[in-house]
Image 1 (cartoon, rainbow, N blue to C red):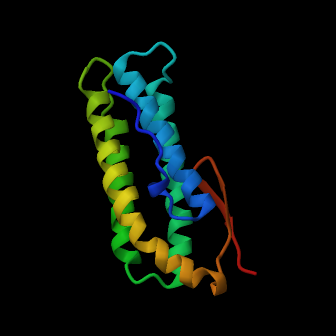
Image 2: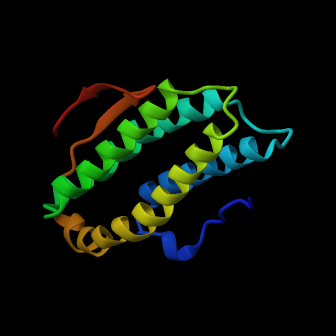
Length: 154
């Protein structure tokens, strides 16, 4: 299976979010390498750690922006994020190195998520945020290995 390439149409025009989406694409392509048995592939345990880190940091960032902008579909979007997190945890907990279909199942899930959520669902909030965020107040937060260590307001 060939790698999925980043396309300009995937951009939502927020540098931080676009960089995070590109990071998920790197993880997905790492899973493809693993599935294909490429020599320089990253161990599956590392890829799952990266997925957990991605979910914790990226979803928090996205949801903070949507909340600050008063995005009306935040609750619905958050449910999709919860589904992703739950599915990744399930895949991680049920990892079986002797199951040849496991990595393929994970790749298919990530590919569907990427093509459905990031290239469609996330595109819905982009114009709304571009209009609302110049005047919105965003609460910063600090992360360390998927754990929030503090949150503050100005």
